[in-house]
Each structure stands twice: as structure tokens, then as C-alpha cells.
Length: 354
Picture 1: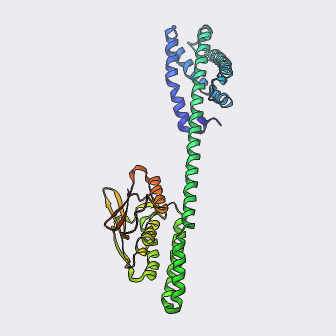
Picture 2: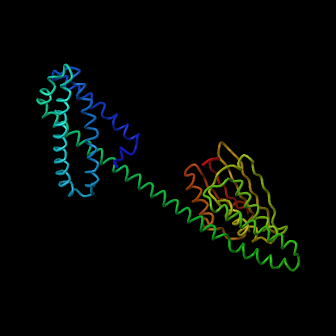
Picture 3: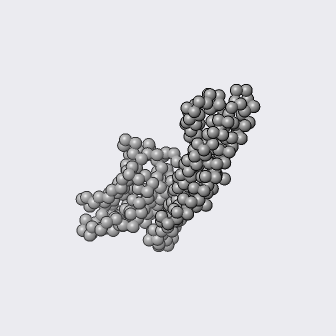
């Protein structure tokens, strides 16, 4: 189907574009001494005929796509010229037939003779209008190709995001699972009650993480719940070595962000910060709203004597890429290391609806 006929908006705009051509044709007829009735009653139906007759240019253009080289322009130009001459002559012939039909209306008896004299002009005008339709058709084809390329690009981006989420789900820190299972094995002998509690917590964490991983965007509240489930297990492992300090503004909780964005930050804070310190430390998480943006901070102590990391680790790089991929220049990702405290700051718009 012709793309103009498949869209009411496009068809309406196309027909509206013929209005000035109708006025032009009426003006030309008036300049040749035609009456208003003769000019108007012929120009309007004749332009409507042209509007639908010249839609055939799209099928010719689709059969003769423009190449990048100039070699194809010669055969294409010949085809365009032949089609334009044929359609221009056909349109002029239809004008003469239409004039014969309108001649039955009182006062329009001279219309066939006037149209007969104007046939060369009508043929030339029809050729020009058909060539203009050829140009419009190529523009529509180019636009459709651009839209299709954009759609495929969006599909590829979506597939990449889904692959990334699958990788994140598969990557749920293996060390965390191994350490949790080792701690669970040790607890079964000395503290069965805590071992059972750890089993329940581990099961709850895995269920939550798999559930969130099926979605592209989640509310910050759900990410916080998952982090709490993870930290409940880690607190059993580390005991008093792991302390938590949370300061979350309730206004930030409905904010949407990419799935599993917070979890790598919390895991990173435990693995590379608190777990490496004999005395442990405090993991701090704060979320506030400032001028329509959520400011999310995750802080943890680090060994001051440890060598400074070169660049971002894999987990932090993924968080940064996914945050900027979702919000673009409206978001910001920062990491700092000051006085033995490592801080990750995420800034993104407060959006609560898809």
C-alpha cells in the first residue's frame, strides 16, 4: 500500500499541499480569459485527479532506488522522463474529458474548446507536477528508511540492554554466594537458628533479584529493598564488623532507574571496602531530592594504604554506562576517594512514570 494512503495524517497533509496548486491553476485559467465558474469547476476536480493519479510515482521510485553512484542516474532519468510525459499527457486528456462532461452545465459550453487550446500547457504542467511527485516519493522512501533504521537501532539497543541484564543476573557476585554458603555451612554446626535465618534471607534475596531482573526500570524503593535483603545476609557473615547508616528521603523512593543499578554499588562497597578492613566499617547510603533530581550516595571506608584503583572497575563502569544510557546528559556519575572514604554519587531526574 502507498504510505500516503496508510496514514490519515500524511494523506491530509498531501491533499492540503494541492490547495495552492489548485489556486495556481485557477489563476492561470483566469489570466487566459476564463470565467470564475470555468476556472474553478475545472481546476478543483482536475487537481484531485492529479493528486491520486500521480501517487503512481511512488511505485516507480520504489522500483528504481537511488544508488550512491551517479552511473544509475542516466537510466533513472530516462524512466522518469518517459513516465512524466505519459502521465502528463494522460492528465491533460482527462482534463479534456472532464471539460466535455462539465459542458452540459449551463454557461460552461465553451469549456471543451478552451481546454483544447490549453492542452499543451496542461501537458507541460502535468509533467512538472509528476516530476515533483517523483521527488516527494524519494523523500518519503528516504524518511521510511531512516525510520526503519532507527527502529532496528532501538531493537538492537533493547537486545543489548536485555543481554546486559542477563549478564548482571548471571554475575550476581559468585564470591558472595560462595562466602554465604561457607558461612551457612559453618553456622549449621554452632548456631542452627541463625543458619536457618540465613537460608531464608538468601532465598528471599535470590527471589527478589531474579524478579527485578525481568524488568528494565524499577522504583528506587525496590532497589533499596533488594539491597536490604543482601545486607541482611552480609550482616550475619560480618557481624559487628558491618554497620549501616541509611538516610533516604521518602520522596526519592518512587523514582525510576535501570534495574539492578544499586546492587553492584553495595556489593562493591562490601567486597572492596569493608571486607578488606579487620575492624570493618560503616556502609552509608543517602538519597535526597534537589531541584527535581535524585542525588544518591553510597559511601564505605577503604584501606588507606591500599593502592589507588586505576579507573573504574567493571561493576562501576556498567553502572555508569547504564545510568547515562537511560538519562543521557541529564544524569551524572561520580566517584571520589577522600580521607579513606570511597564515595559513589549518582544524580538523575526524578521520574516516576514510564
